Image (cartoon, rainbow, N blue to C red; front, side, top):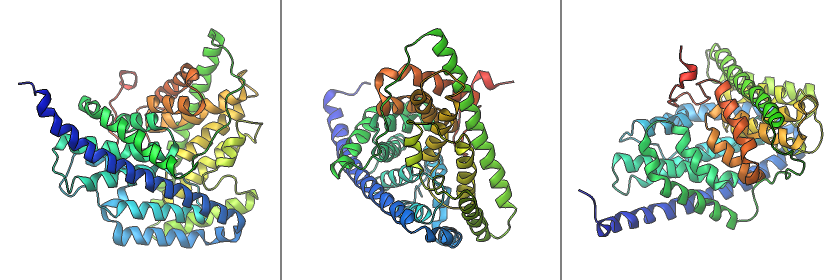
Length: 407
């Protein structure tokens, strides 16, 4: 029996009461986190001696998570598991403060990590806490969790539509996840708006000023670039797997971040530059302007894998932006497309291949670089998504296997 319009009124107001405070709180956390990230990055770059303390910082992070983290140690995978199999225990509240503080510590002392994992975790954690005070069913609980993920992603990167789509796309499984799309979009838009109220904290990338017109040759070159971006996504995933296996052979957990920290410090000393640690945003911006050393994306892959596999905290997405943009920059002498276009398509396409979210990545690129370039971004993101195979970087992600990947 269909519900009458009047019976939907309480449901509408219940979601209003959930969405507005959730979006406001997550947007405010994102603003504080972005400000803090800028401050710790500035301190590190003006006090480079602090990088030598990275091994000890890593030991402290791993010790804290071992003794007090509990399920929070699973990170993004815990949120995915909670979506697939909602439990009474849910997501522990301590996940949010722990991931924020440990990400800041990682960046302060020179780890190569991102921030998306942090935003997704504190957004999902805040959303999960709402279900402790408001009685909702299993399906509503899932939608609320996606609202939190969308709010964190949207407000951190300043891309509300991509944040909403990312939350829905990353879980992959179940048609019913689209039922809450209006609430997810509203939360993403409001959280981004709230974050903007605190000031201009988001990164602004150079506009695409030299973009070629669409043609068959352009499509062919974009497909070639997409294939290479997909291969880069595979290389990143394989490097992460190798580093994970290597660190697991170190029996004492507290020794892993110490060894990883020493390797990163040694790399920085030998390279005589800090451009590959932290978020690497200055290098990402430079990739749109002029040629960079073609080894930049390879170095970033290795340092990010060492950082995250050793036990430091953060995310993979901003390093993936770095890897994709610098790879696109390196391809400019060989693929006759504008450097800015190759950097922009690489920026999102390696990310798409690693997270299995080509639609969100396409929309993110359009929000950052212009909606009228959508066909270019969609082409490379889809090709990278297919070439990189069925497995992404999130172990708990339940990807539907494409027929392309069967047998």
